[in-house]
Each structure stands twice: as structure tokens, then as C-alpha cells.
Length: 204
Image (tube, rainbow, N blue to C red; front, side, top):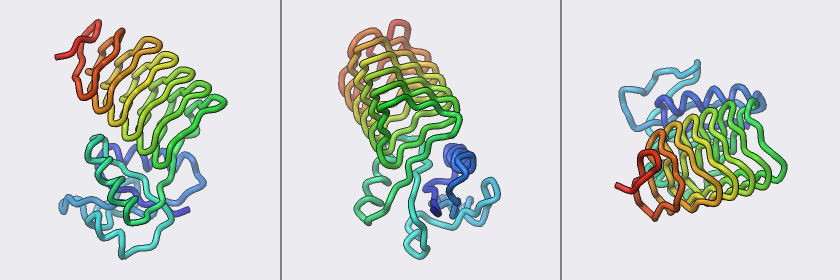
């Protein structure tokens, strides 16, 4: 399978490294609208040009290497409308329990642990060394940053961003497009589109 990566920044590089670690896929190249990146190489693979230029090439699937949730969703929706296929990538050093379901286009990076009967929605990022315990649901286009720890039976809505090292206790509900600050400890439900920071986390 030849995979094109949308975006050519730091997160795209980490995704490329994960694809190489998996070893069963070929990286076609990167597409990015930043003209300064064109004709550069990332891990030995070319930045082909602007994102829309993918239509001039032939590849089997896409992964979106954009860390910002809203921009990633926008690109996911555009490509989906155009009939694109998305690859789901799980680094070989990630641990996925029985009954775990990963949505299309989701990326699971090194040292992540996802425990049994958890569902991760499409186009989400489980970043380096985060953990998601049993019976959780993580919505589409979410991003759990490095070192985030989600306890059991948590519900995380669409587009939620959890900053580095955030922690969530069991059975908490986090509304769509909420933001959890780095290092926050969430011990109560977070409303949709709210920003919560601190220990314990409070909405600001």
C-alpha cells in the first residue's frame, strides 16, 4: 500500500516514522501548502507540492499529519468527499487490547496502551506514550497528547484536545471540542467547547 501524508511538519514526520516501523506500507510522499517545504525531503521522502496536487498522482491511501484538530477535520472531510481512502496506523510498539476498535485514519504512536473494549473514532491521534483504559469511547478528530492518561469508562467527544500529561479519572464525560490543558487532572465532567486547566481541572 502506498500512503500519502497530508502535512509536512513535525507531526507528519512522526507519522512517517510510525509507517516505516510498521513495515508493510510504502510512503508515497508528503503534501503541504507551505511553499517553503516543497522539494524538501522528510526521512528521505519528498514533499510533492500543495495539498490539492494529490489529484495528479496515484496512491492507495492517506494519513493526515496535522496536529490541530479543526484543521485535520477540515482536511479529512475534504478528502472523504473526494472519495479518498484513509490508512489507520498503529506503531508496532503500541499495545492494543482485545476488542479495541480504531477508526479510519487514526494514528496510534509508539508506547501507547489502549485497553480492552475501547473505541477510538476516525481521524484521531493517540500520541506517544498516552494510555486509554478499558471501555472508553474517544470521538472522531480527537488528539490525546504525549503522556495523557485516560481511566476506564471515559467518554471523550469529537475534536477534544488533551494536552501533554493530562489525566482523567474513571467515568468522566468530556464534551465535543473541549480543551484540557497540559498536566490537568480531570475529576468531573467537562462541557462542550470548554477549556479546563489545573489540578483539579477547572473551566476557564
